[in-house]
Amino acid sequence: MAASTHTVTNQAPPLVGYDVFMTDSVLTEAVDRHLAPELRTQAREDLVVLGQAAGSAQVREWGEQANANPPRLRTHDRYGHRIDEVDFDPAWHRLLGKSVGAGLTDAWGMPGGHVRRAAAFLVVSQPEAGHGCPLSMTHAAVPALRAEPELAEVWEPAATSHVYDRELRPVAEKPGVLLGMAMTEKQGGSDVRTNTTEARPLAADGEYVLTGHKWFCSAPMSDAFLVLAQAPAGLTCFLVPRVLADGSRNAFAIQRLKDKLGNRSNASAEVEFDGTTWARRVGEEGRGLRTIMGMVAATRLDCVLGSAALMRQAVAQAVHHGAYREAFGGPLIEKPLMRNVLADLALESEAATVLGMRLAAAYDAVDGGGDDAERERALLRIAVPAAKYWVTKRCTPMVAEALECLGGNGYVEESGMPRLLRESPLNSVWEGSGNVQALDVVRALRTEPAALDAFLREVGAARGADHRLDRAIRGLLVELADLEGIEARARRIAERIALVLQGALLVRWAPPEVADAFCAARLGGDGGAAFGTLPHTLDLRALVERARVAV
Image 1 (cartoon, rainbow, N blue to C red):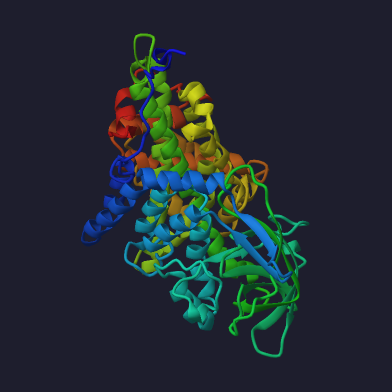
Image 2: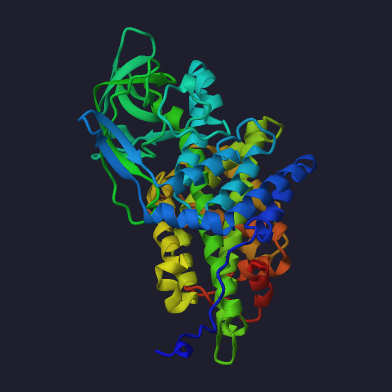
């Protein structure tokens, strides 16, 4: 066949070899906005190093390798000894090593630590999202560990270390550890109060043995796990290490790995505790849910950030393709209808990032214990479940639309878009699905007046700047004034809270063309159910150019 028939033209070059952080105006602006001036220079330097790595051909290849070669369970060694180990592709370990080394598990107690970590999490999740799970669990475990100071003294320094050590050894012998979580069971799912795993006290204070089965255990090769089990006084939180202090393996039988839709690089497992599984109590007996909820709230924020990262990568790929691909006499990006689609995608991505970073800043305020700490804590109580509900819900249709922007090329694995699409529903399911989040918002409204007050103060800072936002705030207040049938309206309320909060933040901080578009389409009713239905009178070109990666 003549070589001329294989001449390649009109194909977009790979989006690679760029700085994921510095080419994201929304993210760089958020870092500058939420960090104190004395922290910005070092934070930017660190994020640039991470951003250049995340956009490099090497790290992109690691992500592809980790997903093409998913983890494998080895229950026994060659001699028949039970070992319950999970083997990962070397690329997985390289990704984790780079992210742990960049401080992705080290935010608590550091000035601006949560904002810096949130930005880094958005960056490292774009080339490969699966390795974010153990990073998230380890980071989020710190507040739970602090419920038991003796445990925190041993485990917190290792959990917040910048050293990734993949070997299973006692914590005293490791420069760094990863932590996982095992809450849900077959019969209960999110209703963890129905857990049947039993904890029997031993003679030593705080020590127990566990018997039971966990239906979902995240990151099963971690060094320890926070587990919920029924102790004599009720549901209690426990720390279950993989290796005991004497170097022997704890009884931690991995029954099988889950065969998941996406998140293929990461292992999720079913595990068995056989009645000899040693555990250390974390917090008081019977207060397990309260103890572990700090961890759950932090991982829920990571679900928001993880979805925002997928959105950002999807829109970056779509705009990049549109800039280079020509059809019907010119670049796709210049076609009015395609420009509308890309602008709408960019708008959704920006709103998700701005909201996620604002919540990270609230964590810094709470962690710092300043004058605003209690108000920010109250804001998080209502804003985190609302954001987790809405942002993770919007992720899948947005990524699907971005894939369509690439046409048939986007449906092919080599484009990377199918991996983004398979990953996109995950954050909506993990750490409590949509109904759980919506009901949590309603619970906060009913039981914590300070949460609603903090929310109204936050959105009130933007009042008077846009009539559509003002009208949406009034409509929300009318909705909240009627408690009749509120459980059946929980999703509607969570959605409106998230949209009003996003609108208020964009009105305050985004360029006028972005805020105008959001208020028109998301709050003012001048937009359709599908992406690409923004009013044509908006400055759509500005929205698209703001989202474009210049390479």
